[in-house]
Image (cartoon, rainbow, N blue to C red; front, side, top):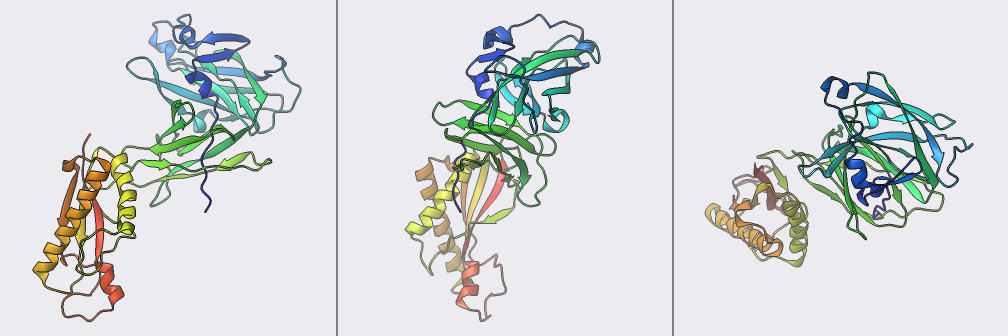
Length: 367
């Protein structure tokens, strides 16, 4: 299967570069952040919904275009700020606020006065400049007019859902981090209740994206997208595995030879992949366990598997600079066989091999 590296260009990049173009005027980001003209103290009006009435504007000619606006989608990104008043997250409002723009480029959507938003639109082959909507004192149902500048570009739309790996059900409030590899610019959006996300990307710029939700394993997506000249969209679902304390997961592709504790190059490659999971989830303490088949002395098998587990943990700690307290090495011998090949039962070598395994178990989650 061909690997793909996402190349992402989004209107929000302008936000992170601290410049926005709004209705023909260039604003520094600080000017927008400190604009207090719409801020009043009455909490009832701040919580009131208001209506945005807007129209797309041809950015190149600075006028309303006569082109038909089929399949443009309007999206509001709700802003969350950190303690330093910097933008920490942009929550994509796909389910409630998504609207297909009319043929003439006009649209309407409902927002709330007690939140900040960036309004933008998406369509394959186009980019738009986001419009900032600050908190504002509004009467219920009040209309506010805006224009969104658009222009043709080499953009592709990436859309999909964040889903659970086990059942494929949607994960709401999942965070998607998008890192521009050439500049180091990073932005974070979060999904709606249906787990949906969408953003525009530039074919020529490399990006790394990953999805995260508390209670699930961190999942970096490091793939490259190469697009043909006529390809303008990509559907990509991201699946996360739920963290279950006490649940053991078999380490695939890891087998010990009989009576052997030495790590082979193949086994080290498997451990290197395991190391990514451990490093990417720093708040989790793991147990790494080894199991033997039923052949040989029970006590000997217990000692053998303990040595194997300790050797694997030693390698992980040395290679990944992992804190020792986060990894426990345990050998269980033949105590937890996964088939009927116990003492006195004749089995094939393949069946015995099933019992010679390594498992990773989540022991606790540290906040």
